Length: 73
Image (tube, rainbow, N blue to C red; front, side, top):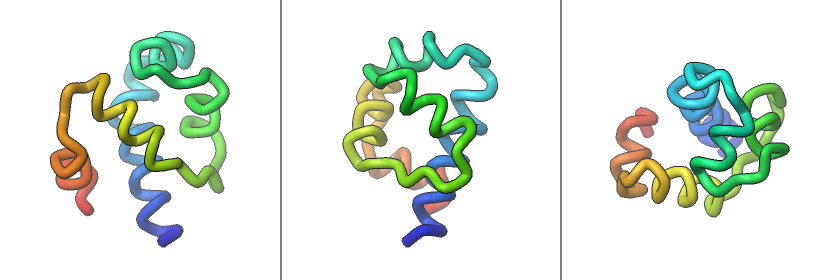
């Protein structure tokens, strides 16, 4: 389960957080706390919650199933 969680965090980080290069903007656009975005970006042990993934999917207008497909899961 930890490997799957890490893949999800790294996918979000590498696909959306790092390219945007603005934690505050990503947080605002995805209805997240900026602390959560910092943890996605910097914390190698961060365990992302399902609600966080759902919020990102809703903001990106993608289905949860499509997200997991995109993440290679």
